[in-house]
Image 1 (cartoon, rainbow, N blue to C red):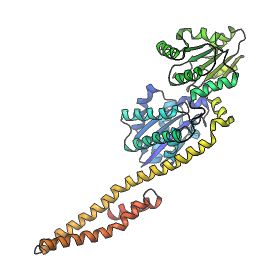
Image 2: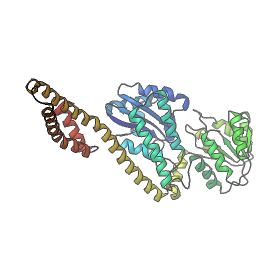
Image 3: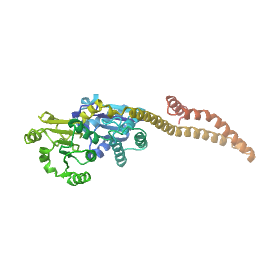
Image 4: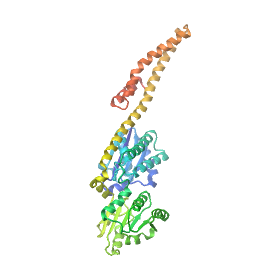
Length: 420
């Protein structure tokens, strides 16, 4: 059986296609049940973030699991498999472990080293445990992934500069405008990213900041925390007429703001330009809005472009150190897993040999009846010693080769030769 990860991400797949694969919190229970119910899958976990939608499974057969997950993703996105098959990626066994560790450390994110992803991995694991779709294998690898993520962030400078997608969102606005001190800023959404945006804005000199959310109390709590204003959702259009910058990231599964709305808004803005930074996936703003004069629209794709252009985001030295730690931890994890897997095999091998020894002693019981207790102890010690010497070399070889191709061959030979 193998640990397999199959997924899509917004680095290799067009954003308008990728956002159809997003799985919101309210749909996660159904998604987990759907994947776990597939006949080729024993354990399952779904990780859906603004950068990726991935399914981690423990499977009997790779090809069967691949087809099951591909069909699940097709149902999720309402897209035929052949229309996204070229964008699908898969890793199994050690590559799957390496990928998960890299994701958890933020190396696979638009903002290298961002902190949110470790929390997202933790939440995804907690949900899978709550839903009963994961067991020993996924539990062990995700527990280790979180430990590796903590080690990388503690021992390297990976998250020193830009530590979150929310912070990068604010910096995109700052890079584009050069100065926010006289800009009226509207933040749409009061979830985790909205909170990060608020924290980042509070460190800058800006004009008026306002928060809008469907739940006014959440927007108000966030606004009070950073000394800003909260605005009822019903007044969103009015705020869009007066603000200079819109930063948005909600959990909506469809566009909240469309082309027609912004055409109307721009007619009332007296030619004042509007910058929109939309890092939601799925997007909050219809991408067609970018065609309207006076509007600049930046989305998650722009964040990937910024990463490619700005070497600070890569933090190259820390990146190298992080990869070294990840490689070390992958080897360590696989060795420990192999040792755990080989231990029952060795125990079975030794128990089987002991059963044979006991059976032979019983077969000769009548012929040993005249022996004294001391002589019986001598026979017992002699047979145990012979058995121990015979088992010693195979046991040492199995332990030393655990986690290697040679170890796999020895294990298979042992199972076949001794019917374990």
